Length: 425
Image (cartoon, rainbow, N blue to C red):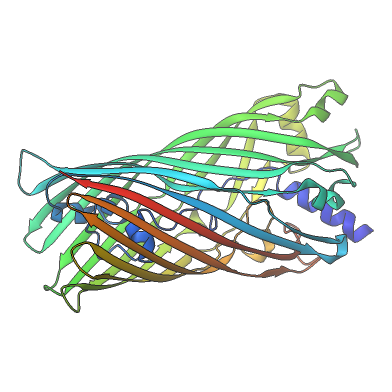
């Protein structure tokens, strides 16, 4: 019983808040239906309007004017087993749909300059558990357990042809983040002793600004090399938290708050090889510097009583200590004829979260991902479709070893379905 009580206290201290809006398992790994079908190995190819995201230098090589509308439906399926509390459960089946719009056109001032505009969702997912299945962590009472994250980016970009075989590009990223969370909260008496639980909820939004830089070199008619860099972006999330238990102490049940979070620096290199005119093979290495952006995050409650109480028990600080991660991606594309194109891909996506800070509302799982896609072209109109399956590797967090981790066996698989419509003027 003492061991279970310790787990309860650790659990609710740990998930008092969350700072990562770009978490593994929460980010959309493949922007664009075509890139999704190729395993997101697109930095060295970058030859459609989603180059704005992958490598803006590639925009200069596009012809005419084009507009693309596409969306991805992300369906996570998580499991959690903890024998000490007799828990064996899985997440609710939810659909997280992300709409996207990309366009590019030739700048009339120069034949070597091309501009583009994108409005897309680089991250958007969530987790929801059945409160009855986790009631052992909240005194036998069922509470809501839910996290929902969305990041929307409006991004103008410019690409410049330095030579016939070398181009540079830059995109400005204007991020708008949204975050909602429900979870049980520990209720304490005047001495600080836990005496029960209540339903805690919060919702917040915030803006952040960053830059993506890209370079693309055509080594030969067969080989392209690409390099892309995205800056670390700091964001202040502002919102409102609610805890009805505060009324028992004659305190406000709601408080505004601020929380400083960050998106990590990202560096990627890629190569695209065309063994034949109809066949393309791509390979990318994509590295995220989580260690400099996901350390600890502090919630700054505006209400003085909320702030004092949270600080007294460390509930205003969320610990992550994430580690840098390197994704390995492969993709291929084959044009059967002028109308049909087939694609396939694979990528390895390691979990940045260490065992010592793992929690159930923000699963961080290592994935082996398999992708497939196709395009049907009808003159100026193209219809894209892609399928992505992320197979998670189970994580077994031992009991009593880490003060800031949720013990037990954790896993998650993700299915993502992408559909797109392209029109070239």
